[in-house]
Image (cartoon, rainbow, N blue to C red; front, side, top):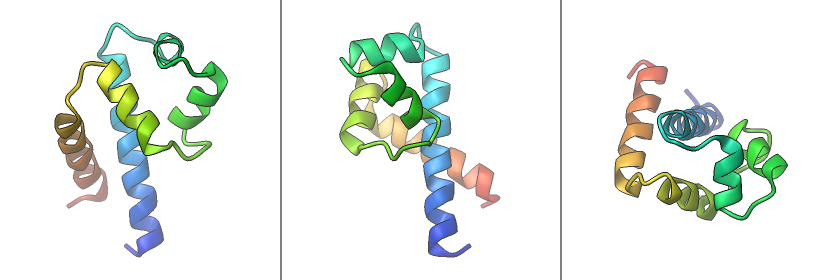
Length: 86
């Protein structure tokens, strides 16, 4: 896997994990966007990978979901390794 493919795979794993955390929470993407005081359409484009998500937005979302950042990062890393077949 070259650098571009690795970056795309990491992005997919991070977004997949964020969406999994949203699904496991009491939030919907819409309620989470509201909690972050962010436009829902913008947040939705971030979560679908249509726009790059700033790290600050990611960490704010993870915090709003009540997931420690380190736990989220570990879960995303595990997801990446599983999806990449490592």
